[in-house]
Image (cartoon, rainbow, N blue to C red):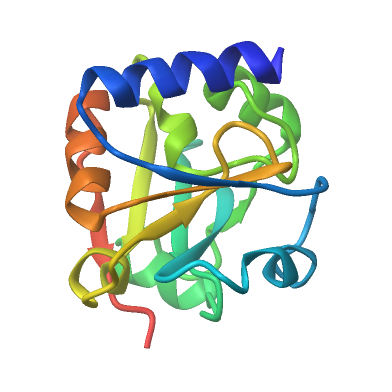
Length: 169
């Protein structure tokens, strides 16, 4: 299934004339496992949190630079959700909305959130930090795909997901 979804993603990126670079590697489930395979790539590597607002049941994808710390209470307050309302969403919700399981969530999976019910919080440094490329999993945790920051924004516009830019300094 992942191979078909990855092919669909790659077809979309080609249709948008977005040039990418890709590194295939063994499946990884943490940033620490992934980074040794990406020593030769230039740019920012992402990590992702798939969250749920416990009150409104809204789903959130938080995509940040791999070396950032995310304080869920602070982020929840910033988003106007009140303190402590963000929790990790279950894998079933991720499979339903993004078509990927644990370890594979990325901003690229928003292609499959066709009703735009997942809200995106994007680390502003990824698109405003001067990085030549932004790297994310392409529907599988056995590869990492890079694209220019402006192309990432164009991809998100195509999917209908307007990112909420947030500074995680």
